[in-house]
Length: 349
Image 1 (tube, rainbow, N blue to C red):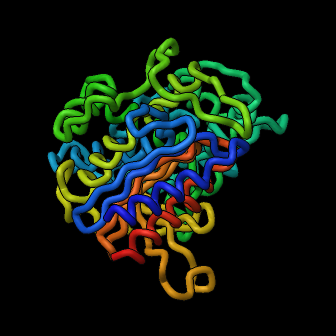
Image 2 (image 1 turned 180 degrees about the horizontal axis):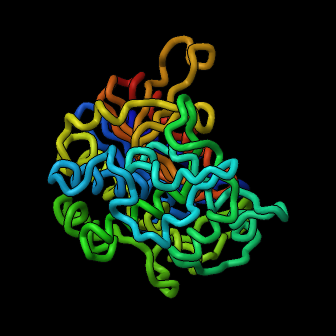
């Protein structure tokens, strides 16, 4: 194992170019052996923003609620949200589809709702563009939904073969969780995820003066947007460490947070970002045969985030991998680096 550890560490060290990757930390578990490493300006104990990997935590809570009969995946969201939120939420070609959206549609990104974060408005601007330019700002759930209502939906809910990645979906799921529980979202995470998995350094970022998480980069500069990070909420606001993120992804797929047999029902795939596919609250990373002719890169299921964070599981190899490259401009670098780590481990075994 010592030789493998050296190769893994060398892989991380070589990734640091101080142009795109300034720091990285990863953990990989295979055949009951876990390795953690870091390089550059990150250490394994550092807390970092996991961005949209937060969505897996939301999925875990929803599935926990399903197991307790507190919610049904096929239920209309109108059962859990107030009329003012639903009003004009999804109008396409002068037809109002707001009341047709289900919990499953939100989880699977099949609602057709626009993405309040990345979709450009009529002026050709998006909230994402503002933040990447360093224009930090705070928004509420209400403002997020109001912004989403000004944008054009992509398709009607549950349209066959259609999926569109939308952070709006998970903002709504966060509100639904709070309405069902009558508790703040982070309190729900604490009770259903942090405490059972003994996560003491994982939390929903809510204080703009909190400097514990390492700042991520946009290209070659740190991107300081603490106000925005307090606003991402259920779609991307969690802070964690590589060790605790590993504990979470294992708990998610091993049945510690909800019945394990639910996983098979999440595997209904729709293309979103090549080669990524969206399932029901999870994503699949699977390269086509032409890009993976010898099958050395296994199918991975889990989630990733714009900060260059990923948390995935390979059912075929029973392998788990989590980590971050902490780079908003090139989040795909985490997959390239993760693949190198996976190949190193599989070749050695």
